[in-house]
Image (cartoon, one colour):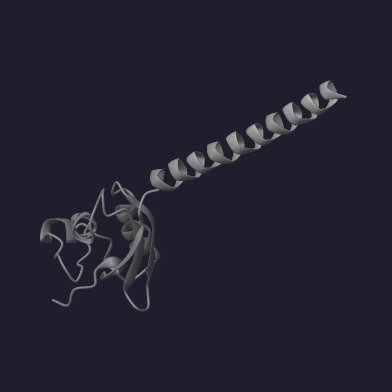
Length: 127
């Protein structure tokens, strides 16, 4: 009878020990995954353009900036909405990348030399 009690207590302690070790390893896994996630912010810029070619060029330029996870330009409102990691980039850097491909933003003007190479339907400046 004493052996049976001893085995029952030993089995209970083993099960309790396994349960505790599993829950503590889950907590550390959760902590690691949470701390490994990058902070993502949403930003907006006003970007000049006219057509689907502009939309493609603007979104690709923004998307090539390291730290940008998405970018969408609305042709009607001229608003570019983007998600970015502020540890890797900034709205100012994204604006400069877009200006470099020929599109003025509310922060930067595209160089005339680049703007002048845009297709005629993409030219948005009034002369």
